Length: 117
Ligand code: 5GP
Ligand code: ZN
Image (tube, rainbow, N blue to C red; front, side, top):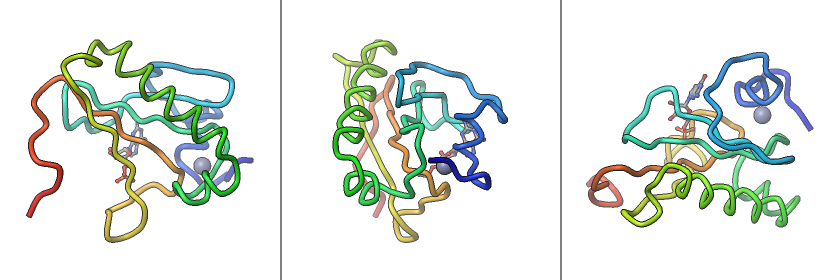
């Protein structure tokens, strides 16, 4: 599944460049273009799903693969022991900018409180 208008589908297809961190048959992890921490990696299924609910509803096994890849990214980035955060924005109140489900992996410094006031 692929959406020709989707930024992250274009990254999956190689039509837009990215800095890959980890890749499996169905999952891709690449560095965020505007990092908020020393480690800021986006982990996505290669197939297009708009958000977490669509992904888990359609293919819970793939959702598990994405989570396992996020843990693999933390390991590869050397932040597994120091600590890391996994974040997925869904919808306007969460500030989701790209409608291709993605999990942010943050690490490499103390990450502060979970939410701003
Ligand atoms: P959201 O706000 O949807 O949770 O996060 C979208 C993320 O995608 C942002 O952190 C933003 O910096 C990142 N992003 C947007 N466009 C690109 C791009 O072309 N390449 C990469 N690597 N990241 C992008
Ligand atoms: Zn997409």
